[in-house]
Image 1: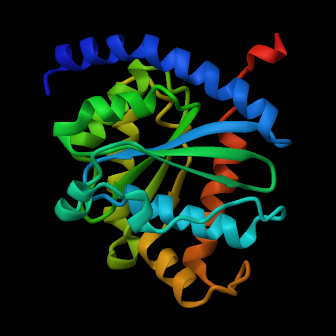
Image 2: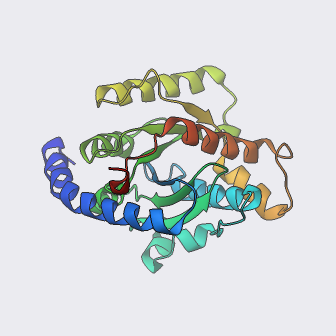
Length: 246
């Protein structure tokens, strides 16, 4: 999609997103004792955004101190009939979970180019994002588009998750993927050199949680990577200023 079209679509969505974000934040202050943050997964189609969202939901449900997380499966997040049939996410899906420090409303943004407007709608609600990159493939077309759109609609910070590292056996290639992604982030106005990167496998973590519901921290390295990701998000994504704070 041409940059001019992306810019126009992003600008048109910002006003709607601002209204939605303010309403969601105001409601969240009432509902939750912990600080509320709107987070989203962005990135190229099939790089693992929905799988990661499901893994985060399961891991946080298992390890949440308050048990206030309602876990969602991959099928529940990818819930539209066309999504299931085509194996892609079309509409932005929402889930909620808690870490030890925060309550999150999580939007799983579609990566397919045909549905970029739905991605913009989801991104407009985000206080921070997790950029998912498939390690074997590296950053691709929608990776670039989602970084640009995230910047245009005002997503302040991104944390990067290098996914599918379980099928990678070349450390140098992983370093090259990270370097290329950092350069792309810098190109579009994010602090590429300072952006945190976590390496893991969303699918391995999801399968481990499904096979062993009683897993604890330290039992599975892939689940621990999901915990590390969310601890990093807690630290790196700043709490947004609420209207009630003014």
